[in-house]
Length: 366
Image (cartoon, rainbow, N blue to C red):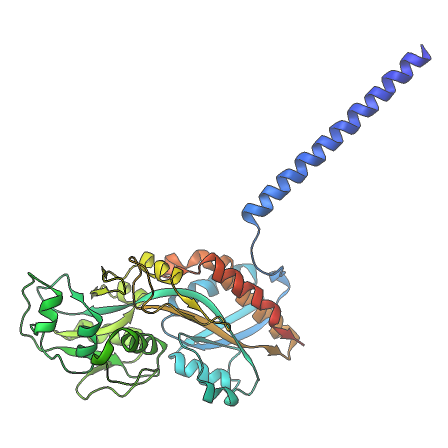
């Protein structure tokens, strides 16, 4: 009787142990699956513990995404205030160099000659999103337009001056083009969008492109101008016969009509987020994480695709602000990526995202 009772107790204990082991295995399996599918790829940061005010300035190209991301970040880091003034990539880099701001938004890299002017020392580039630079136009009766890089180069060097020019007609067989005067419209401020557009023409326009590429090139006289992407968009809206380069977000918001551009594979491609993503897949990523997606390979790649960055100092002497800044960049690279499409941007490829997240480890705080 005693032996039988002992056997029952042993069996019960063994059953309980097996049940616990099974539950533990099941729990571990569930946790692993959940972690693999939902865990953020970024640094392990307690957003709620962060505090401070982060001021940034620069690119108008990335403004729409930044505004959405600032709102999202406020929800998870309520004690951090992020401000952003969109005055152009040139201003963003100048403000960061003078330490007026904690971060710069820019669509172009800092020139090597300008690096010594950055008072805080070495800088880090964090790519955040990408988007097409549209070639938007205002031409009554022409709803669809195709332009090759050679023709585009001739328009923006002032060599092609009317819409019925032979170069444009050759790109658009069967389309009736008016003799309307072309009014090229460009940025009046130092601009990363301008840098992307002119560097594309430098790469793809061949001998037809004769202007020095950069943030603020010397354009021919008589061109229309606008301050910021929104300013160029407004100028195009108001000027019949005009054509200019505008970031995708502002072009869509302004309901502009934009041309399909002939890419490296010889295909005329419309400006879309899918086209920008395809360009990212064929882009060159440099060691400092600047990315050249211009004139990228691939039949579906939109050829004038720009990547935009947050630039910060590698060394952050103020621990509180440094941690808040790291949290902000981490958010842009992780949860913030899901806001990209809603703001009319393409999110980073997973490979580029992981490289940018890994670079967070290079930030030196305190």
